Image (cartoon, rainbow, N blue to C red; front, side, top):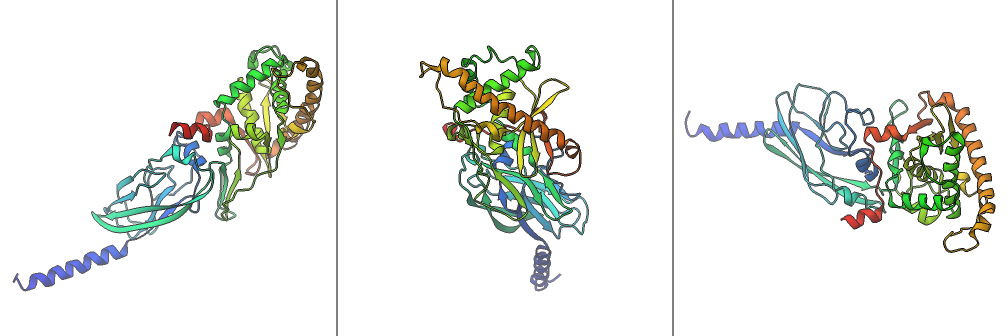
Length: 393
C-alpha cells in the first residue's frame, strides 16, 4: 500500500462510519405523552417491576421494566453496543444504561435507564411547569449527539388514573389513588384523639371490638369529628394541565383537605380511608364512572359502602370540646345530626356497592375496588404532605 493511497482509504472508512451513524435514528420519550407525574414516580418507587401495573414495552425493551423516561432507537444491529445517558436536571440525577443489542429487529428498541430521581423536589410541585429532559446516545463508543424533550411536570395533586392510545390500547392506573391515602400523616393521630375525646368510643381497637356495632361506632366517631371540623363537599376535580388520552384528577393531600375543610368524592374517600386504616380496619377505594366512595369490612363476611360526599349533609356547628364549656350539652345534638348523615352515607354507599357487584368482577376498567392493604403489599407508598417534604429538603 502506497502512502498516497492511505488518505483515500481513510476517506472511504470515514464515509462508511458516517453512513453507519446516519442509519441510527432515535427520539427521547417520556411516558405518558410527555407528562411527568410526581405521584406516579414517588408512589411506585418501591413497587417491584414484576408487578403487573407498569406499561408493557414489548420484546425489544432494555433497562428498567418500570421506566418512563428513555428513548426509542432504530437502526441498531445485533452485537452493537449502546449507551443512553439522561443528563442531570432539576428532578433527576444523571442516569445511564449500557447494553448490547441481542438480535436484529425490524422494530425500534425501547431503552429506559434506571433513573435516579430527586423525590423531594418532585413532591414540592404545586403548579405544573415545563422541564427540558436532555439525553445522549452512544453507539459503539461514538456519540450520536444529544436530544431534548420538553415535558410537562404535573403537580403532586395530579393523579394519573388512565391512559388511552386507542380503543384497543388502554391502561388502568386507578390503583395510584392508593398513594393519596396517608395513614402515617401526623394529623391522623390528632384527629383520632379528638374522636376519643367525644366519648363515643373509649378506644380504637379495630376488629378486636365486641361485634359489628362497636366497629360501626369507631367509624362513626371519626365521621363525627370530621363533620365538627366543618368538612364539606367540594366538586373540584379539574387539573390545569390537560393531555389527550391521559386521564388524571386533582386529589388533595391529607392535610390540604383537613385545612381547607372541603373535599371532593376522591378527597373525602382517601382522607377517611387513612383514618380507618390507622385504627386497623380493612378499607377499599371504590371506583365507578366519574365517582369514588369507600368500602369497609365490618367482619370477614360483611362489607359496607360509605358515600363520603354526604359528610356535610347535616349542618353541624364546628365545636372545639376544649374551648367550649357547654360541649357536653351540645354533644347529644351533634351526634344526632351526624348520625343522620352517617346512616344515609352507609345506606347510599352499600346500595351502590351491591348494585354494581358484578361489574367489579368484569373487564370494565371504570369499575374498580382498590384494596388498600394489597396496594401497600405491592409497594405503593403514601405521598407525604408538601410541608413535610419542604422541611426535609
